[in-house]
Length: 255
Image (cartoon, rainbow, N blue to C red; front, side, top):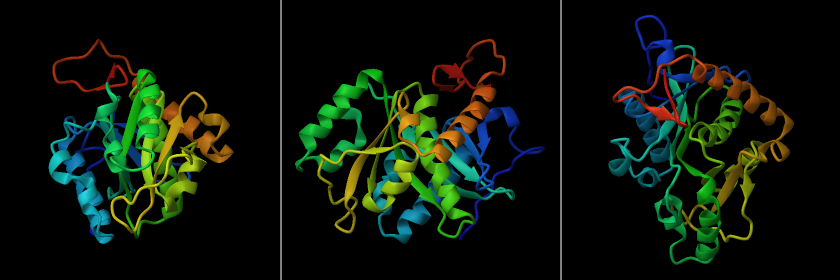
């Protein structure tokens, strides 16, 4: 694995500049930021995504040329090991103002289930829909299973931080159990589609932050609560209001 490092602590980024939490199972620290506030970290996240997706021959699914400037990304998560290596990540879009803005609907265009999925999105838009894209975990990362489980919890955190009720992911069938563990509900009545190519059967998965505790595993529920408390601690730091260029997450300025 080609390593990408970030400076953490003295001489690097100040602690208060990035929301963060530690996954107690994998040991990795997760950093949450916006592309605008941390462009270098954003580029490292994208390079990691490209490496992993390119290994499987589906790097076109990232749509790098469209997303690299960060304008479509509300926030992103990266997992960092003790030496500063970026080993996993995802990005979030939304909350969306209109059904047509939901990127994943394009995979169902002209396919069975398109109308039903659009109706589901339209029903949820008023309470907030956040779509998670370009999820990756380095293939040779240590404690990879625990790291992947932590990544699945980040869908819930992304929706909560952005003030949305619903998280939304489209994923190949091999990742379903992992997402179910963090409270994701697979929409069985929507037929799968061959995306990014014919090797994969992709399905929609929803998280409802209002009912997530009732469907996630006990372990994932406990870890979500622990990590949410850590994120809320960062939000609780006093601030006097947003200043020009200051990024917002879930209606609160980062400090």
